[in-house]
Length: 72
Image (cartoon, rainbow, N blue to C red):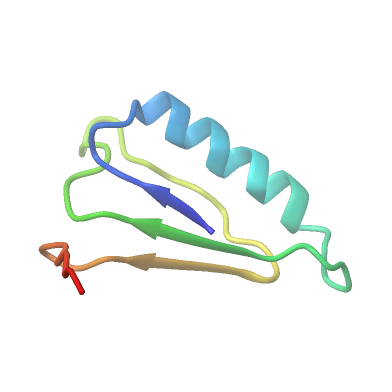
């Protein structure tokens, strides 16, 4: 599981996503699995969008408008 947040450098996020795609695209029968989550916020811009390829066994999700933290 990988969690990105808007305070992270877009270049770092793009590099990690490209690395995962390179590994997963030919991984149809492999054992690697990824869950990629984005915390609430803006990633990229219309001039410089965050674009990436999703390969086999990769799940991508946003964490909603606000992150709730609870204590027990």
